[in-house]
Amino acid sequence: MEFSRSIVGLRVREKLDITLVSANNLPDVRKFGRMKVYAEVSINGISKTAKKTQVDKQNECNPSWNCSIVYTIGERVMQETNVDLVIKLFSKRTFGDRYIGEVKLTLKSLFENGLSAQNVTHAVSGTACGILNISYSFGEKFVVQKPSGWDKAIRIMTTVGVTLLIKGTIILMTL
Image (cartoon, rainbow, N blue to C red; front, side, top):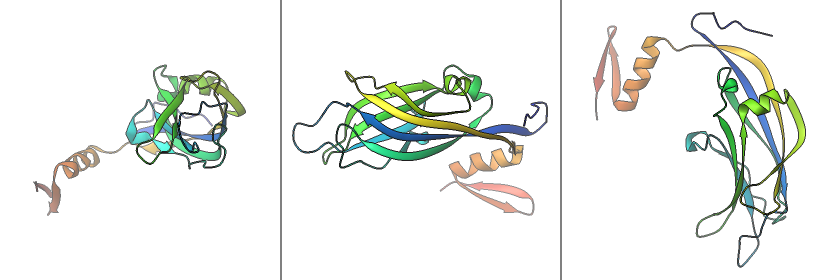
């Protein structure tokens, strides 16, 4: 289903479902104890977009998650070459987690490679021979309405203070 961008006040969105299947041959970054590995996925490394897998406590250098992570992506973002899906791997530790390595994939390249892919492997940077196994799929496109000017104003004002609406007049009270 294709939507026209000329529809005023509407935005086209698409769901991206990433499944972090497993990793293989990761270096053991611990000096003592077992390595417990998890992955953190984000858009361009922005912490606000970060989502984590569960920690694999059993498989050490060959973790398995089968964890599905879903993002809603704007249609225009899919065409940008500077928007990356960043997958960082960490070893969980009591006194601060240790970075293992990462995989960066542009959303545009994922989209251009097909609407879905199973068992795709990527080399983990920062490791000699680490591999990350993922699957992904793009869902159907859907349309959402752009927020009105009032919605934007209220959202901005509520981040600054408390907003009161009295007889159609907005009053901002800072705390």
